[in-house]
Length: 420
Ligand code: EPZ
Image 1 (tube, rainbow, N blue to C red):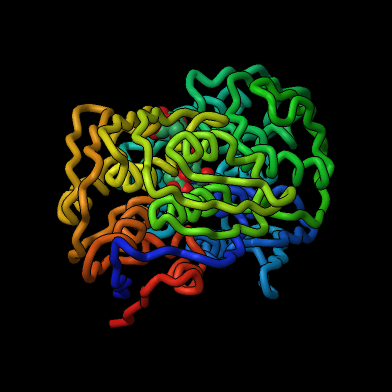
Image 2: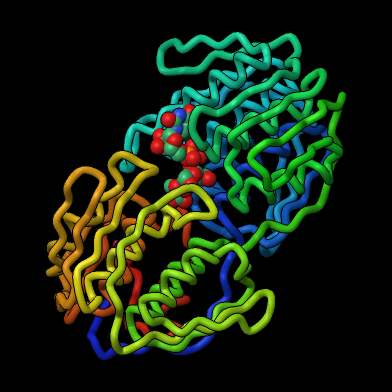
């Protein structure tokens, strides 16, 4: 098991330039989409993170051939050798559920393990299942597996009872090869959903309303290959913006999409961080001596992202007053708080709210990560905690951050990975 060791101090000032990687949450659905065609799909600017290798293992099991050169993935599924995504892979990465819709649409059959609960709540997939049944799939849940079959999916109208990023992505992919038109209502409009739609259109899908809450998909008989660029990771970018705010640093982020970070930038500016757009794909963030407290409520895009909640809580421990952070997307996404308490934070949790006391100097400690963004928040805390902080079980971090410690080290952090 690998660990990350950080020698932090409150006088650390991160300085320099960091290149943001492609978005994990955009590349995963894009890889699943390659199931929809027998032709080759090429994805540029992919992040070399653990979740990419996990979904490529799932895809290989299904019959895909793929290779990665630098940060470009070529993948092709000429035919399937199985329609089963195994339990050990799906339980290690919930996003494997994204193969369900494409498998059904192209091959009429899918056997996908039910994703287990994970560190951030129960995370059911009922909205995926109901939507696919409305498209004509027969679905049974047996022995922990979803068994789905469909002679041919047919278009219909589906309204999501709540916003679901994965559900929206699965249903758009399934509908792209269905007979007739599908209207999806109350869709998620995250940039990653838009990036997927743009890929599907390049493959020949007929999609109207991209980026809106109502999307119309006219099914086609088959889709072809395409070359597509994965958008920058707005959550990795947000994590570095918080790192600059936290250390009163001065860092430039390149290969970002500032327009995907409006709410995060607005909240950081309110707390005192100076953020300027240098051009369409780079930002400078200069942290302020005084960090203003503020209440934050997470919500679907374009609201404040739940994936930035843990990182922002760390910043609020250094604010000049108390903040209330409300988590509305997941029912148990405060697992990082127990670990932050051990570093000296003063945070009280009541239901979906965390009351974060400011002006709390942190001191280094041994910590354990439980999910991807919780891990990132512990690394951030370690930057300013006096003494040594160790973040164990960094495989969570590696799921979604490419070379995080090397990037932070290049900005002046004293951080290293220990391979045991
Ligand atoms: C995606 O997860 C992201 N993952 C998550 O990022 C992100 O936090 C989440 O969207 C919300 O923005 C990927 O894109 C791979 P949801 P997803 O379906 O699609 C409930 C990270 O750290 N729900 O939008 O799984 C669900 O329990 C990860 O990068 C149902 O009730 O999230 C949750 O409370 C973490 N039934 C809420 O909806 C369903 O059928 C939002 O889930 C589906 C979801």
